[in-house]
Structures are given as C-alpha cells and as structure tokens.
Length: 321
Image (cartoon, rainbow, N blue to C red; front, side, top):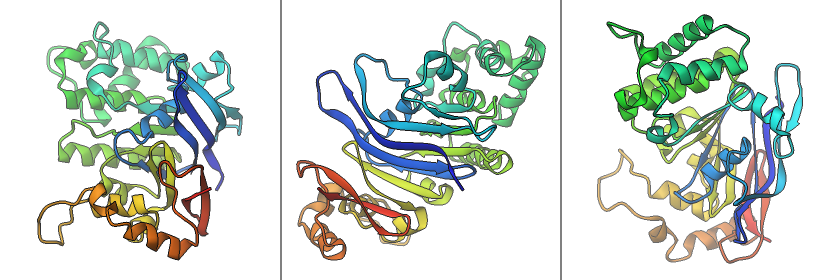
C-alpha cells in the first residue's frame, strides 16, 4: 500500500517564538487508521490543522517540511503546504475532511444546520439544492439525527442542539462528501458511551466500504487500542514513538510512551492512586533502560535535536541527536 497522506519534516511556529511542532513525520495508507496521541499541548491538533493550512498565517508560520496528498481518485499528488488557494479550496472538505475538537463553536450560529451542510455539499459535488438536501438528511440520519415531526431537521439552528448533537452534525458534514482522508480531532467529545460506539462503528464502516484513510487524534488510549492500526506518540511538538498499535501498547520503548501507558487506568489491577507521567519519569529508570536497549540516549526536552531511530521494522523512536 502507498500513503494517501504523508507528512514529512513538518515544522510550525507562531511569530518570533520557538517552533511548537518540530520535524514531524507520519503517513497513513488508504483504508487504515493512524492515531496521534499525547497529552494536551503536545502538538496533535496543530499538526492536524496544518494539513489543511487552517492556522491563521500570520501568526502561524509553516517553517519547513511537506504534506503530500495522493488522491486515490486519479493519483493526483499535491503538496498542501505549497498549494494555491484554489487547490486548497477543492481539497478542503471534499477530498480531505476534518471533524473539529470543539462542537460548541465549530458551527455558524446564524445559519441553519441545513444551510451549512448543503453549502458544503454543493461546493464539492455537482448537484442541485434539492439533491443536496437529500444527501444532507441522509448524512444526519447516518449519525443518529432523525427527521423531526412538524418540519425538516435541516431548518434547525445550532442553539437548538445539545453539544453531543452538534458533534454529530460535524461528523455528518465531514462524511457527506465521501472524503479520501478524514482528520478526526477528538471526534467523540461530548458524546455518551453508546453514541460514541455508534459513531465510531459508522466511521469504521465507511473506511472499509470506501478505502478512506483516517487520522484519529485522541487522549483515550483505550479507544486508540481498539480502533487504530498504527499510533504516533507526540510530546512537546515532536514524535517520540511510532509503530503498529499492538506493538506500541504491548511494549512501549520511549520513556514518554512508557509513562503515558503506565498512567492509564487498568481494569485488571486493584484500584489505587493513579500514577502521573512525572511519577513514572522521576527516578530515571526508564531512561537508563531505553539506553541499554537502543544503544543511544532517548530524546528529551532540552537535550538537543531529536532523530528518529528505526529499532524494528515499522517501529521508530526519538533519540538525542
């Protein structure tokens, strides 16, 4: 398989400050899910928004790297960091869609749900208003928002919906144009557990049926373990470990990855005080074990440049340069 979306050396900063995303590498193939995990502030969302150049520039600066999108429909290759406005408009929302993290502020409060969905559909598909309305209603129905008595659901406004329903509207909008790549930034935020499973099952079904690639950004390691094929662990704007989900969770190598997994609750252990990442890193044992296994020091903030070291087929960790 070849990568549909390939990020290489991505570096992003704001104004004169230090880069907040540094030399990020990852890729995702058609029909597969890449999960990007890490604590808040690690650079996950900045990386995802950079794919579609959604960060206001200025102050954002794309300081290096490339983001190559290979459209499965025709094989057209586009470097999104260098694409012009017209090309970006064609790809955004059509060939690459995004579910944003904050459903309460992602919808326009003065436009109806239908107006926002139909506008997106008509920009990217050749259809009339009536056909677009049918597609919009089907997309809403797929995420569990049914027609209501006395009028079309498309005439409803965002303030009439709960946070969970607005999140489902965002998912419907992203999926309505059958994208080749879906960037899902915490897609189940504000959803109850039952609805979370229904939505994730829908995304998995679409992925299997269409070959859509998905980049899943999440703090929920349990969700990632059950839904993703590969995982990319980020810390302080850098990728510190990358590999198959089963391998990374069964035996994390980089000290940060080990600490992240160690501070997750387990149902097979007696409950007690949950360790923090700082607790796991306090005595330096993980650092020493990494050096003994890899033969190089693990990269850590303040320790200079980071280099990605291949330690097994498809498995990479960040070492001090």
